[in-house]
Image (cartoon, rainbow, N blue to C red; front, side, top):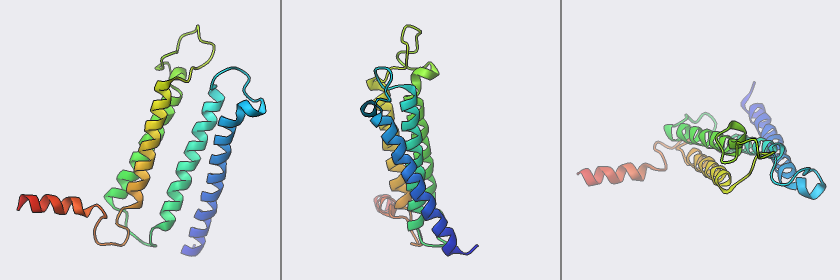
Length: 163
């Protein structure tokens, strides 16, 4: 398969994932306005749609960032660290979002009829989002076809301090 067709398929896939992600977020946050919120609070299905939307948006973001890289550019360590950091942030957001269902949240007991979305879980999801964004920034700023990383100035500074 030629490179032009591969890039076109990736672009279409990224747009489809972007749309699914936005629909997931719309379903999660728009449920109270359309009567889909059957019980008070942020429910497990809303959290599921939020996490599916976040996953689709993260995958779409990396597909689009990959399209910005030059064709045939080698992957750098910085790009690999960025991808892994984003994946770790996604897992952290899932664990924080489903903490009560996993039994590690602040309200896992039977006297609560449904999961409780508290400030600790929201903080965990926000930390996961920050990790995803930082991973995308690291991935995007990796060297591409340049001979050195865009963060090379950090290594140059250490070498001048040692001299």
